[in-house]
Amino acid sequence: MYTQALDSQGKEPVALPAEDAARSAHFQARVDAEEKIEPKDWMPEAYRHTLMRQISQHAHSEIVGMLPEGNWITRAPSLRRKAVLIAKVQDEGGHGMYLYSAAETLGISRAEMFAQLLSGKAKYSSIFNYPTLTWADVGAIGWLVDGAAIMNQIPICRCSYGPYARAMVRICKEESFHQRQGFEIMLTLARGSGAQRAMAQDALNRWWWPSIMMFGPSDADSKHTAQSMRWKIKRFSNDELRQKFIDVTVPQAHFLGLSIPDPQLRWNEATERYDIGPIDWSEFHAVLKGNGPCNRERLEARRAAYEAGEWVREAAAAHARKQRARAAA
Amino acid sequence: MSNDWPLFEVFIRSRAGLEHKHVGSLHAADARMAIEHARDVYTRRQEGISIWVVPSAQIIASDPGEAEELFEPARDKVYRHPTFYDIPEEVKNL
Image (cartoon, rainbow over all chains, first blue to last red; front, side, top):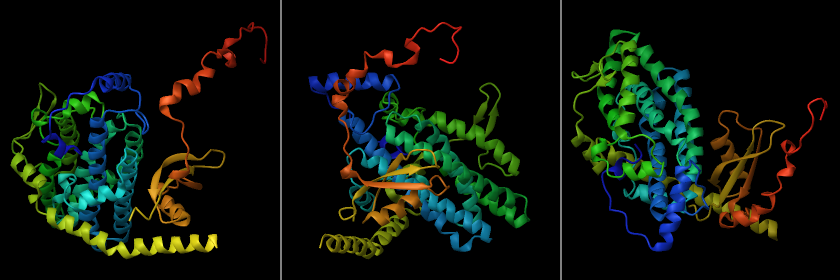
């Protein structure tokens, strides 16, 4: 999920000098033994760089993810819904913070990561490039998008890099309220008036396929999966996680009395899982390339927030300098 | 931005009787801001009753490359563990 962009690009690994080859072998032995790698441990440069990219893109996804839902804070239908939505969006901000913190342990600064996001160089999860058109979208996001995120994040709690694994444990604890909040919204709408039911169905129609695509390209098209799995950064393949998500979510949709927008969706008695129709990968690649419905808007919002906040950051730093000078005098 | 806002490591005591545990890091302009940000980032669900923030540059860490030598002295002192000693079963309260 957070390797969506990594999965479909990249160079072949470079041959290592002899000394590094020995240390790499020792490193791989540690990973194979399920030992955690910590910030000051020796690690192959490729491992460090892959993690820097993945963790920072994961962090960017959390921060950008605040935008589609933040859009509905002023229009939440009740005070309770508003307070809950604010808490969820705050959590996403906090998750970004945990992840930037983990990424920094690898040797990249927060300023550099922000520069990569704001310049468009760094990617974030494709899902946040879709608009939230109705209140039901907030429910669909909590139920499906956070649901997919949970599916992906639980295995990462056991990834080989200590700080990333620990950040994931904190995040997973907080994520389950997000999914329940979303499902509760869908349930309320599904049990409501005809117009509310229709709104819920419409949101499901628009969010189902993008949520399925969150898991990234199919295994056959994911060049980097093998190396990520060998390094125990990734524990399950894209298709495995996608299938798990579908099998768990379809019964939930049935409970809601809503239909999944896939005429080819079918329970397969032999394999005991749901078969689905074809995924439109051209849409996925278009969104990754920057041509989704909201890519430009998301980046502009982030840039505007960063620029508008500059005076606050400078004022805080100036105040701190003044206080230090006074204390020294 | 982060050039003027140094990195702080954050430690939280979750309840009285427990020690402060390392939970992560954050950037802040000064100590007060670091405490308040730590409160916002790491205690949204009442995870803490006390916060320590330490400028990361102030932390001195042992070198993992040196770990073997540094921790070697304890390796052959298994007699520091109670299980090393053979006490007859009939003896109580030992």
